[in-house]
Image (tube, rainbow, N blue to C red; front, side):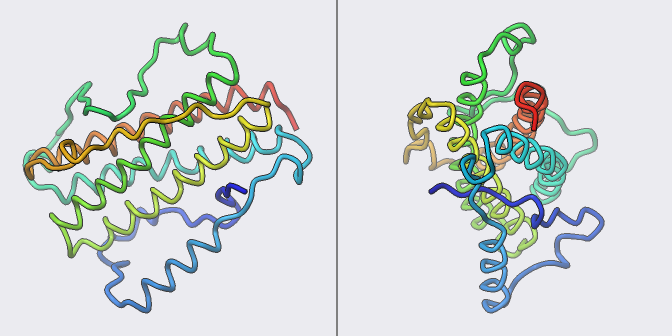
Amino acid sequence: MAEGINMDSVLPFASEVDEEEISLRDDGVLTSLCLICASLVHVVSPERDGSVNTAIHQTFNLASHLKGNSSILLETYLRHQGSPFTDKDFHIQGLNYDGVPVAAISFLEWRILSDLDRLDKNYKAYSIISEFLQLVWDDQFELNPTKDGLLNMLKYTQMQVQGLVNNLTIIISALRAPPSPVTDPLTLELVKTNTFEKKVRGYVVCSTYKQWIDRTVRDFNLLVKKYPL
C-alpha cells in the first residue's frame, strides 16, 4: 500500500539555524537520518481512518506544513548559486523550464474543476516535481558537494513530495478513479546541460514547487469544506 507522511512526526526546517550547522558528513549520522526519515512515513488509509474525508484533512495539514518549508528551500537554494541568483531583489517573473508543470491557472478555470480533476492535476504535478527534485539534487551534488544543508533539504523535500503523491493516490483511488498516467519528462538530452542552466533549472523547480504548494493548500482548503470530518 502507498505511504504518506505523518504530520504528527514531521520535523520542519529550522529556519533560524544556518544549514551548515546541520551538515551530515559522517556516514553513521547520515544512516541515522535515513532511519529517522523512514520512521516519519505512515500509511494514510481511508478505510482504516473511517473515510476519505480523514485522508483529505490529513493531506491538507501536510500541504500547509510544506508551504512554509517551500519558502525556506527556495531561499536556501538561491543562497548557494552565486551571482546573479544572490543579487539583491533577484527574481525572474514567469520563468518556465521544459517539462516542469506550471501552477498558474485562472480563477474561473480553477473554481470549476471537479474534485477528481483538482486532485488529479495535483497528482500529476507532484509526480513530475519529485523527479525534478532528484535531478536538482544531482546537479547540486556536482556543483555544491560540500553544502550538506542544501543537499539534505532537497532530499527531505523530495521525500515529503513523494508522501504527498502517495496520499493523493489513495484519495483518488478511494473516490473510485485511478490516477492518470504520468509521462516521464526527463530525457538524457534534457538532463545534460551547462552549469548556468543547471542553476536556472534548479531555481525554476524550487520556485514552481513553492507555487504548487500554495495552489495545493488553496485546493485542499476548498476540499476540506466539501468533505468535513
